[in-house]
Each structure stands twice: as structure tokens, then as C-alpha cells.
Amino acid sequence: EMSPQEQAFQDRVDKGEKIEPKDWMPEGYRKTLVRQIGQHAHSEIVGQLPEGNWITRAPTLERKAILLAKVQDEAGHGLYLYSAAETLGVSRDELLDKLHSGKMKYSSIFNYPTLNWADIGAVGWLVDGAAIMNQVPLQRTSYGPYSRAMIRICKEESFHQRQGYAIMMKMAQGTPDQKNMAQDALNRFWFPSLMMFGPSDKDSVHSAQSMAWKIKINTNDELRQKFVNETVPQAKYLGLTVPDEKLEWNEEKQGYDFSEPDWSEFFEVIKGNGPCNRERMDARVKAWEDGEWFRDGLNAYADKAADRRKA
Ligand code: FAQ
Image 1 (cartoon, protein in one colour):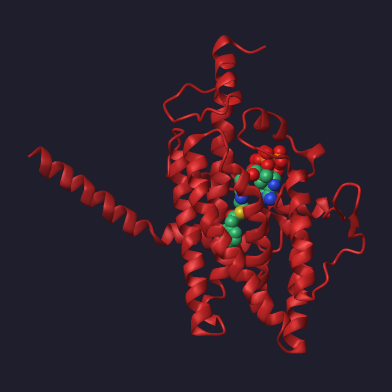
Image 2 (cartoon, helix red, strand yellow; image 1 turned 90 degrees about the vertical axis):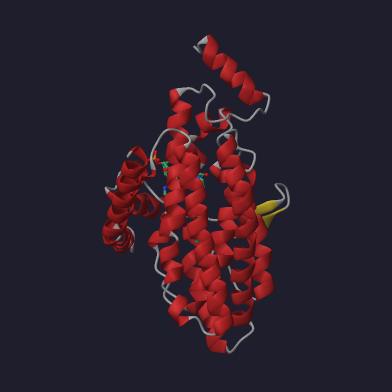
């Protein structure tokens, strides 16, 4: 049973009106947004780590400049998203504290290692490709600040996907060893990329309510199917093989049939037991602790400036 206030809110959402920070909203709507936007922000920030790992080892100056710009973009995405979350009455410090204490999640994908340069191609092509597939519809999400953040983020994300694909093209057209590296990167990143869309619809606890509130526009399985349909021809163009023996075009559904990822692996990764969870969290906690003197200095300066204004 909805209260009249909740009904009025739902009517606004159904009409496609944007909900803005000072508007009334159900507590569950606010909480769901804090969780999703906060996780999304954390993903952007933690997501800098696997690629940051290769900035110093990029094969050419040009590749290094491009990768540096991409990783800086991810930092910017994290900051717009933290700002969007703050409009819901939660501070950035609280969100970071929840990340560092393991109470909030970030995307499963960033718990996989980037072992070599081909992995940087695969991350751009597949991980950013999956990220855009999920984020393009979120430009129409019902919460104004989140939808506006998504518009800018999607523009940058499509450049990221192109840069990853450009690396894959170079590798796939290179020496046999380089082509093998590209294939190996695809083999390792394919299923983890499919996991980015979240559990299958039957196990997605939040989808129904989030879709009713238009926080989410599509189900996890819908977006995963779209991603497979778009990515398989891109793999073919590279002359690479998607590591799935069950992959087959299905004329009737006008899409590919494909194998599900190993969901037990997914649930282990989001519980903290993926290959790099410890390393990623340690890196983020260390960055926070190493920045303490700087935050203290800023606060001390702000306090002094406030005292001077009073005097
Ligand atoms: N990883 O009921 P659902 C990027 C959790 S792109 C970890 O289906 P929901 C760009 C979920 O939180 C990546 N946890 O959940 C980049 C829930 O647990 P909870 C970030 C996951 O929210 C590229 C439980 O499973 N993008 O960073 C994952 O309705 C390259 C049940 O799941 C976004 O965050 C997962 N993959 O749907 C940066 C997009 N999937 O919270 C650097 C916005 C599910 O109850 C380099 N988010 N869980 O404890 C969304 O669209 C949604 O939150 C989904 C999940 C679709 C991710």
C-alpha cells in the first residue's frame, strides 16, 4: 500500500519527471540511490588501479599520454558521482569510510589483475564497453543529478572504449606473439566483463523496485545480452575468438546464445575473495591514510580563515 505522498512521487516518476535533491522522496529511493551511486563512484576510483599499474610501462609516449588521460577521466567520474551522492544527504567521508571498512561494494571487475599490455586493451574494449552499455540508459535515470553526471561520463567512456579497441587492433594485427597476448586477454576478461552487469535477473534482488522507480532502466540480463550482441562482431573483426563454445547466433531472438558466467565466482568476488580484492582495498586505504596530513592542513587553514573573518 502506497501512502498518498508515495503515490504522488510514483506518478511523477511514471510521467518521466526528474526528481531533484530538495524534492520529497521515499526513504528507500534515497537509500537505493546512495548505494548505487556510491558504488558506482567507488568503482571509478578503484577502477583507476588496474590501469594505473601500466602508466609507467606503456609501450610508447603516445600510449602513455592516452592512458594517463583515461585514468584521470576515471578520477573525474568518481568525483561527479560522489557529488551526486552528496546531494542525497550523505558526505563523501561517510561513503569512503564505508568503502574502506568493507560495508560498501565496488564493481567486481576491478578485482582481476592486469598482467600485461594487452590487458589494457581488453579493459578499454570490454570493461569500458560494458560500462557504457550500462550507463547510456542511466542518462535517463529518474534522479536529476545522477542522470546529468551520466551524460558527461558516457561521452568520455566512449572515447575510452575506442582507445581500448585501438590497442586490441594493434596487438591482433601484430606478431603472432602479440596476437596470442590479445587472445589471452580476451580469454581472461570475457566472463568477468559479463559479470559487470550483475547477477542474472532471477537473483537480482534490487531490479524490480529500482526499475519501478526508474533508477534502473533495464534488467541485468537485457544489458548483458546487448553487450554480447555488440561485442561478438568486434571480436570477429579483430580475428579473435570469444572463449565460449556455446556462443551461437539465434535467428529467432536476433541475438547470440551464450554461456552464463560462473556465478559462484562472482559471489565470491563480491564477498571480498577475488584475486585482487585485498590489494585494491589496501591501496585505497593507504591512499586515504597518506592524505591525512593534507586534509588536516586544509581544515586547519579553513578554521584559521574563519577565525580571521570573525575577528
Ligand atoms: N560488482 O540486485 P542487483 C566503471 C551486487 S563501470 C559488485 O542486481 P543492482 C567504469 C549489488 O550491489 C562499473 N557488486 O543490484 C570504469 C547487490 O549487492 P548489495 C560501475 C555487484 O544494484 C571502466 C547484489 O549484487 N558501474 O566503473 C555487481 O540493482 C574502466 C545484487 O545485485 C556501475 O556501478 C558487480 N558487478 O544492479 C572505470 C553502474 N553487480 O548492494 C575504470 C551503476 C551486482 O545489495 C576503468 N550500477 N552487485 O550489497 C548499476 O547499474 C547497478 O548497481 C548494477 C547492479 C547493474 C551494477
